[in-house]
Image (cartoon, rainbow, N blue to C red; front, side, top):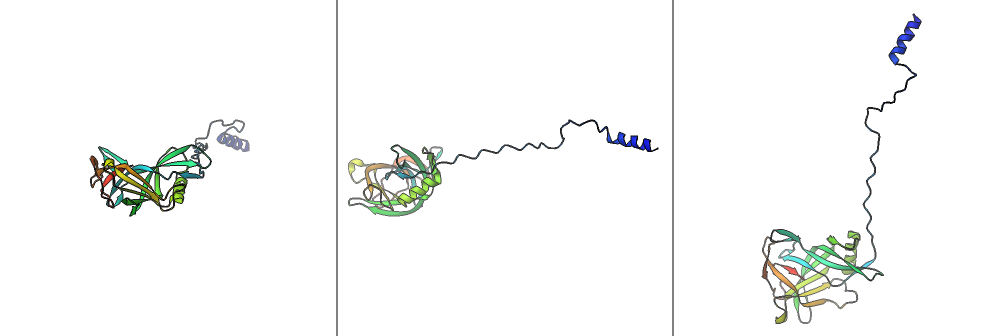
Length: 216
C-alpha cells in the first residue's frame, strides 16, 4: 500500500528528471532603453550689437505678440546680433519681445514716443547661434536693461514716407554714443484694431505712435 501511494504522488508531480525550457507566460522582464537626454546648449560669455532691427506691431496697448498679414498670423520680433567673447564672427537671434511700457525720448533735433522691451521676459523665436535661450535673454537684460525703440515722422522731407528710428537702452551702449538715430530708417504700415496690416503707410507725429507695423 505504501508503494502505491508513492507512485501516485510521482504521477501527480511529474517526472523530476525533466526540465521545462518554455518561456514564462508572464510579461517580459526586458527594461526599455533609456531615452537620450536632450543636448545641453552652450552658455558662453557674449555681447550684443547696440543696434537692433525687426518688425513690431504696436497699438495703444503696447507691442502686439502677433499681427495678421493676408491670411497669415505673424509674430512681432526684434533681431539681435551676438558675438561670443574672443570670437570674430557673429550670429543672430530673433526674439519675441515682451512689452514693458511706453515712454518718450528726444535728441537735439527729434522727439519720439518709444516702447520699452523687457528681454528678461521675452522668448527666442529663431536662433542661429544655438546657445541656451534663457542664458542669451539674461545676458541681453544684463547688457541693456530695458531696450528702447521709438519712431516718428521723418524730420527731412526727402526721407518721407519713411520714419525716423530711435534706439536706446536703460544701460549705456558699450562703445557707442548715448543713443542711435536712423533718419528715415524705418517704415510703418497702418494696422486695424484686430491686428490686420494693410499697405497704407502711417507717419506718426513726433511724440506719438499710430497703430501700425513698424519695420526697421
